Length: 93
Image (cartoon, rainbow, N blue to C red; front, top):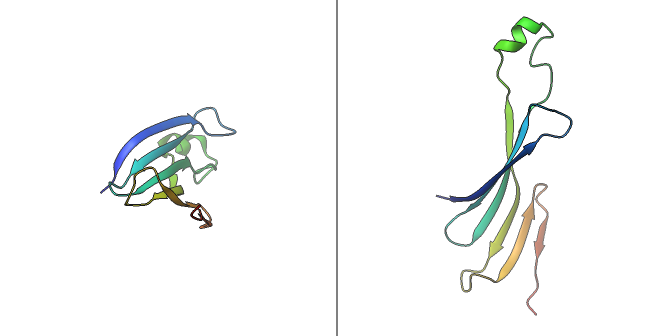
């Protein structure tokens, strides 16, 4: 179970009426996740203006980045994973 820390909404690039939602959550042990929710931009199945009013916007959601901390000490950052599953691990000093 994760707990939401904060959310942020901003206009989706290139649109005036769609929003990107960014949610930051904590898993309760040692990971903070940054999740994004974007609208799927397109004609929503048609090109007929009467039908477009009845269609709801669809969204895609993904985890953009995860930050992992050691369980031994809360402020010790150990790794970061991004949307294309690149891992950055900090080496101990």
